[in-house]
Length: 482
Image 1 (cartoon, helix red, strand yellow):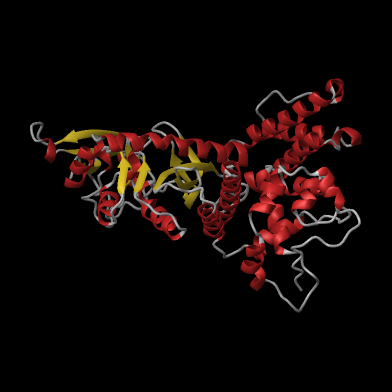
Image 2: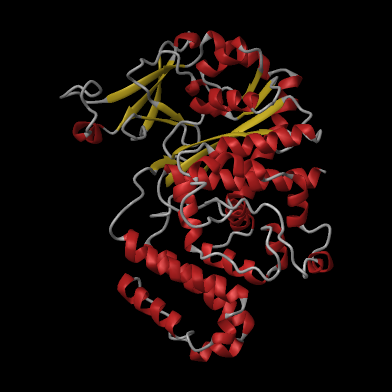
């Protein structure tokens, strides 16, 4: 059975909300800004309306997840804070004397109720339509870029994560009571994981009797994070990895293991579309989906602004066919006009190199062709032949006995020539200045909403995390502009 629970029940204490929660409170403003009944309409089909115990309202459960994202809290801490924080209770549609849910209910809600639904596009669409209705989005441009998120399993070694979490806990303890230093166990100074695990457990055990200190929110939150990390290492770090995450390259010398979120954003800094992929995917290939999603969400697109990763031949042709400007500075290496269908090598703009279908990056680049005939020259990208010899995908790609493996790309095509002319115009230069805005948005997602690290395993969980982070970011941006 499903209780809708989208309105406050009767209580003699409801006046407390007006006394305690100011009108400019963020959660009060979000409640006034958007009607959350759309969540009930989307999820009602996943509940039994006749059988079983009365279920928690899907609206309330969704709001718990939103609070978790806005304030970057664990499941345990968002529920605990909802027990005493009146603004949380008001936002959740609870009366002051209501009890909170069990934290495990949030995990079940994510897995059972939000599974197999396109939450990412649904939430972006709701906020874009809201921004258009409020007259916030006035531009006819989108800015595109990708930001990376490290997998939960191994952005750092287990010992590095443990040391970081225990350091954060000690810092919160020292800020509260400096004298506690003498009662804590001595820190582990070596790089042995077993020693660090022992120290971490002893640190947690040493706080069991300090009930008053541990009850303080800033200490309790750090302690819960350390406990979760300790459990995670025991359950995952040493026995499994994220099966959907892949290695991507941030530059020629640095890489990451995780996911990419490809984002389109209006000039008013409202995210209008997003595509979440594994880390090795090319940025430029996602442009058509970002344009189509942004238009489906109500955006009028006359200009697309991006970096050199988006100036490939296919994207230049799409811009011409669909009558929008592509403000993307041309890089000769980005042209992919002569690629065969079965030979999909992806260009990594940060490293300036191509990556083969197996995920190996080229090790050097050389220019071929007549020096006095620039239009016929091509760049040849050389791959590590020793990797090609043992590659699982070498059949049809690497010829046995060959001394080198290269991938050649024409330097300039007709489409690129036209783009070069466009780059010289004042219009291009003026619009290109807007691109910095999406870099700031990427930083906001990571620093404010914890988007630098995946909270769970798998692409579907990453898409859910992205949906909530972008929804929260768009709501706060709309409130700011209003």
